[in-house]
Length: 273
Image (cartoon, rainbow, N blue to C red; front, side, top):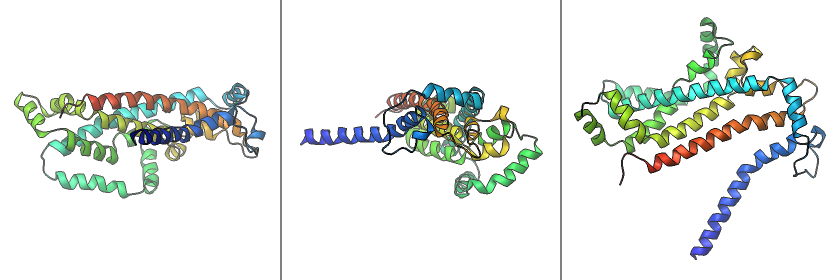
């Protein structure tokens, strides 16, 4: 019976892995063939030999390296800022006592129910007044902290950061910030790793807001640069897939790196059994 359960479990895991990896493999297949074969039926599941040619065509049409660096800079800066500020705010809501704490937390969580599209016009007017159009400030500053990040880390902190640890740190003479830095942060490392993955992926894939505030090609992020591969009368799908394939690699690197910290965070929690 146990052998059958183990066989079903491994079969399900293998099937899930194949379904997850197939879109990435399919991008490689299309990127390595001419566009005329993209809609061919039956489809060709074997990669071709035109990947380098399609990549070179893509590099001739857009500044891929510059756009990639812009996305790395914006996504990394926003991710680091969100980890710090969201964790700091979550610590205050979770382990500090101050007037209006519950009302302020409910108000922040309530902003999650407001569609982001409603804030596009006022946000654009603010960016114009600040002269931040065509500037990375328009992407970084609004993303320094998020209601979801505060909520996510607070909920994790409520269950893992025991009040006795905080009281012990205060009795040892730690200030609130020292308690946050030395006691709280190591405890919530799994939640921080998860938030880092989600924030980096969101910023990397964000298209709408960057397409509104970034007009100059020198400050385009990778998603905006890839959009420029779409021509008015012809869409070279193979070239677009070649660029999309290369643009996905940094996301995989971040995911693998953060997953390692995620696992180590679980095994190195400050509070054990």
